[in-house]
Image (cartoon, rainbow, N blue to C red):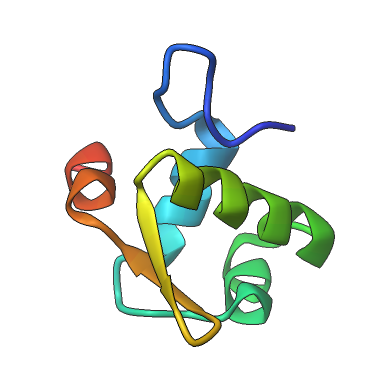
Length: 73
């Protein structure tokens, strides 16, 4: 299930992932725990969201970019 739609906007699972990051940087395991999604799906979703500019990754922790913050408002 993709996290970014063909039009470049987050899908419902992408939004769930983004919203799980609103309280600060998290590891993929923490995101999986918050969203209830399988870890493999979270990892691929975070990659997609990072490539689309919605999240940033530093030392294995993911956080919202400015675009990601805008998307969840």
